[in-house]
Amino acid sequence: MSQYMLAIYQPDGEPPPPSFLESVARDLHALNEEIKAAGGWVFSRALHAPSTATVVRLRDRQVVTTDGPYVESKEHIGGFWIVEAPDLDVALAWAAKAARATTLPIEVRPFQDVPEH
Amino acid sequence: MEPAHAADVERVFRAEHGRAVAILIRVFGDVDVAEEAVAEAFAAAVERWPRDGLPPSPVGWIITTARNRAIDRLRREASRADRHAQAALLHARDEPIHEGPVRDEPLRLIFTCCHPALGRAAQVALTLRLLGGLTTAEIARAFLVPEPTMAQRLVRAKGKIRDAKIPYRVPAAANLPERLQSVLAVVYLVFNEGYTATSGAALVRAELCGEAIRLGRRLAELMPDEPEVAGLLALMLLLESRRAARTTAAGELVPLADQDRSRWDQALAAEGRSIVRRCLRRNEPGVYQIQAAISAVHSDAPCAAATDWRQILELYDHLLTCDPGPVVALNRAVAVAEVEGPGPALALVDALDLGSYHLFHAVRADLLRRLGRGTDAVRAYESAIALTENAAEREFLSNRRRSLDG
Image 1 (spheres, rainbow over the protein chains, first blue to last red):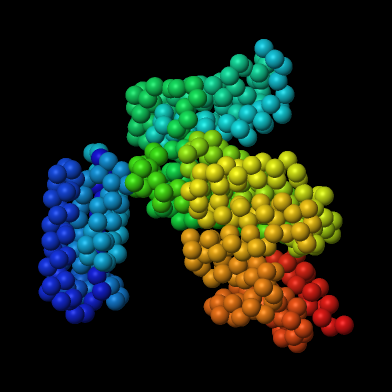
Image 2: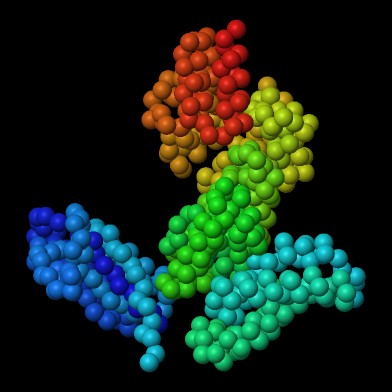
């Protein structure tokens, strides 16, 4: 089994109308149930808006804290799943359902294996 | 045992490289290990077969030798605590080796190479490398890409297959039509790359057509129930049958209407036409089958004047409903010009938004010329020439343009 991150790329700005969000939530709930039933569930949550992000970095060996997000963009990660799947096709099939439900692009990325110590 | 020559190794390599790699990938669960093992086995064959004779099952010999040598090498590496080697060895222990005709293996491999998670250029490179057995240098030459670029493209693609776990299997029925599209597109792209270009590497490029047809035949053998697979093979065979007549000895392009049809390869054309007839009987049309049918109508005509343009127009109407793009509409307009005259065809062409496509201007130029609008035709030829990168096509268009000066 491999682990994958399924990240939702969400445009910044005003959220869509509540009626739309309700139907998204319903579809995502069904998807989550499906992932759990398949034994693929690890974690999933939605994030607050990028305007709530804070960036901490090292500058001249001093830690500097600034208002985020880190990447200037019109779209940011709005939430993500971590799933366990036997191969990429299984992860892509879940991502396809997430894309259909949210109408947003989903990036699927494999996690590296945990190194042995 | 029969005596064997280097040519025998070459023949087995051409025919069986893909199958051997496919089987070894299943055995070791790793593309690199499989590739290297098969390369080693063929290197051993070059040395052994001329001396010991051709083995009864050459591909079986290759597979067994590749497997044994890979296991030896992996054991050495695994003892140095190479986790990668250990994993491949572990995989091999659990995988029985089939030496019989395992139809599924090459099919799995081509679906892996053409997986939609890989970019088109990577799909093409992997397919040629793993199924066709072309070297990285050969693929780089054929696509006019520096060899290190091609090598990196292959490394990255294989890395993605490994790290993202792109599965090694034939997709489920529900996904098959979509996934097959990608496979057919890759094979047709390989063919077209060989068919349209006439630059310095012309020889390598002609080999691409041969490779694409080999892949097409293989697919048709493996998926006899997919009419579009047959359609693509027929289309490639019919186009290939006209290769010799398509250019002059000096490398100039000869349009279909002016080709010496006695130079068409009748065997390839007949094979293509008979596949088209089988497709028509099945009546499950698709874009490749319809294009093959159009090509077959051209093939049926003993001279250009005898071409059944009405039938071609009907086929284009059909194609346009399956694939409603402007390029198909442009080709249809060419048929309209033959059936209804250049005036109605020009009206259709002018409505298309294809200003950056050289053939749009070339078709317009030809229609304008036939309508006696010389000045407009010259301008259209000049637009076409400016947008053409292919030297032979540019030469052809320039000649046409000059013929209007007189």
